[in-house]
Length: 275
Image (cartoon, rainbow, N blue to C red; front, side, top):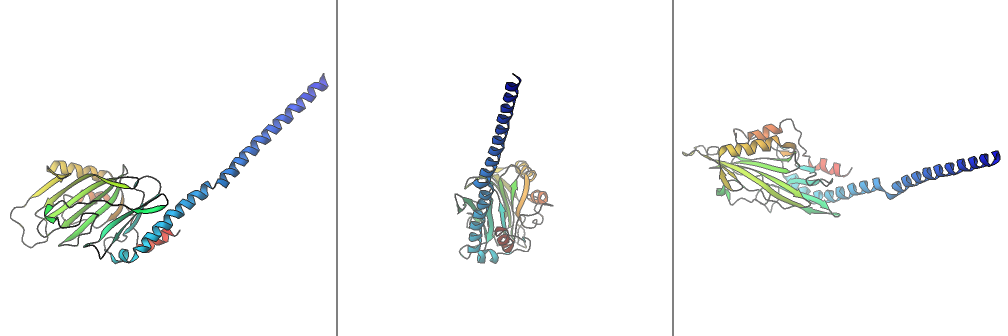
């Protein structure tokens, strides 16, 4: 009886040891399989894919990128994830001989290739209807243009610009939602100031009008929109210096103070994409 008990005990120990070895082996095999599956390698390969693709895009536009310079914008190229898919979009300004003024391009990477994103950035004053609005333009007219491009805390993209005009000075802010490769404008508000202009003689009828999505609104509503926009600012992508004496847009630039711009030079962007 005692021998049978000992024998059974030995067999039990052997089964347990075999089971433990089997579990350990399975774990190791799973780890090995995980390594062989190239999970980390796949991530690196994906990084390499979009970086190589964006590098090709940048190099194709190198001359136009380097042709656009502003002393108050040290970097005119940026990488920022606008649609939350984990892969950044590529944004940069160019001076294109085919266009009247420098403007900002946006590219995304999906399904193994790059795609340029189309978008609209209107001017608040209808009297400037001859200006292009199929992108964010640096209108080099009269007193020039100030602009800011930034990400909001809720993941949206916003663009704000102000132009010192010959008669009127318009400013406008647009909010965009990017879903996949589509960039949709969800909010547009602006103002036209007939006092701030680049002429020596000021017009007799000094007036400021405000609008939202193309309809005139009161100053209080405009300032509420601007305040909400300023509080929601999280990351600055591009920004010129603050326009002087423009109270209708100053809060936005003040909200950006102390935040580092994501903008890079062409050479810095090429180096980053080559890492």
